[in-house]
Image (cartoon, rainbow over all chains, first blue to last red):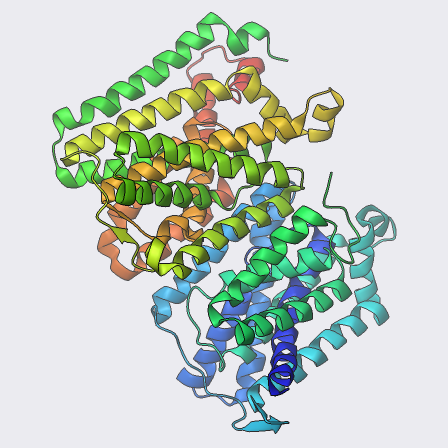
Amino acid sequence: MTTLLGILILGTVWGSLYSLIAVGFSLIFGVAGIINLSHGSFYMLGAYLAYTFMTVLGINVPLSALMAVALTVLVGMAVDRFCIKPMRERHVYVLIITLSLAFFFQELMYAFYGPYGKAVKSFVVGEIELGRVEVSYQKVLTLLVSTVAVSLLWLFIKKTKTGKSVAAVAQNKDAAILMGIQYERVYLITMAISAGLAAVAGVFIAPVLEAVPGMWTFPLFKAFAIVIIGGLGSIEGAVIAAMLLGYAETAVSILVSPNFTDMVYLVATIFILVVRPTGLMSKSLAYK
Amino acid sequence: MPHFDELYGRKVTYRRLMGLGIFSALVLMIPVFMRDFYLLEVLFLCHYYAILACSWDLLTGYTGNVNFGHAFFVGGAGFTGALLNLHLNWQPWITLPVGGLVAALFGLVVGSFTLRLKGPYFAGVTFCFAALLYKLVMGASQVLGGEEGLFGICGLADTSLGNYYFSAILMLATVFFLYFLSRSPFGLILRSIGENETACESSGINTTFYKVTAFVISAFFAGVAGGMYCHAQMHVGPELAHDSLSGLILMMAVVGGMGSITGPILGAYLLTGLNESLRFMGELRLLIYSGIVVLVVLFAPKGLIDIIGKAKVLAGIRMGWKINRHEAKLKAYD
């Protein structure tokens, strides 16, 4: 019983974290039609910036978190404007430039901080006990923040005018242009949101995991897997799939072995793509 | 619209053979003039990466399906060859082709399931296969060596010089084959699949068949290269299946110029050389390396081969040669 509760709770925490990363990734794909391989780098930058501000410079936690996210958002917007925009016509080039950028950011972190993991102190210390399962406050905080962030995003997309323009471009770019929506601005906004969410994930997970230069690969490809499973372009699908992945990974980690957690998303991706390439809730076809 | 003769005629074929011949001569003659072991080792790496980059380019550069998991074939064949060598004592001249065939088989299985998918999905799934292999290697430490890998594989040749020539001959054979394959009707079909697959299909071409074939051939050569590398290092480790290898191959092919077999060769030589020459920078090496790659991709997305081609045309115009647009466009095929 405790095991089941542990899986549920931990799975929810990890699932909410993944949903932060995956939603941004799915958004940028649904709106701009590009796979942003440097998405994982925003996550990494969030974590490293959090480390820089909090541990190295000793700035208080809320301000550091804000600054880390804000800086990453700026970086994301710069990436979109200077690196992705010139390449938008050919998707292959976007893949390549974002991948190269991801490597570049990794090496940048390596050059500044070295290969060893950087630890960040927990924002809130202590643990809460839910029915004999101990969960650190940090993880609970992460869960809260991700829920709030994703809800805010949902509200933004559905209720505000800018959010609706984002949805419009995702649905039909040409029609959106005819409606007078400036799609380049929408792309920039989307990239900003996407980078921001990833950065938030990075900032809040930094105390839990160490910050290493190579930390961008697995969130990126997990986000990719989640988005494939949940269907590209669908935020709800991304959240659901992210939670599923969180539960699945936690279950495997507890019931089988921690070594296999990282294989869950790989097997799931392959399985889904071979069996049901359209994903669970997709709006677009994976087949030609 | 290029005339048949301009694509396959005798003059063009002779010109291509000449080009490749000069390149081969250069490659084969280098050790005669320079016997520095370090240089030979570096050039060995160049050849290794050249084979990998060219084989990768056959699929991705031509059909546009980005393959993020080329290391899957390299590692798969490398480990197969290593195991065959360690347990059955098969020698390199058998393990290399067998490794290549195993990789080709992987390519056949993976490709027939996945090449129906659109671009980003295919890219993701290829990454997943490579990552799975990596996890497998790290997990099955007893059989596959885990983090340290397997040692004690028999060597390729007894000296650096021998290794160099082995790799050189293998690379030249691969390059000749892939070069002429890409300039054949098969290559033309691959290229048209990359340009507009729907139009290609409406012409009655079974695009999946061609894509899978390209994938299988690509996998075969990658596998042979992997086997070669393992025997030369006498060690095989999980880094042969790591995504950084896939990324490196991709970057070499892109910097050199995708969609032409000559571009990746240039990219392989250039980036391997860059990597070695930056060693004196210590920790900043990879930063500068990746920074240069980003800059090249931003400003020369079609690769350095394309820049060289454009420079040739410009120089030709300056010198008053008669370059008509027709010929300049043809450069894209050659």
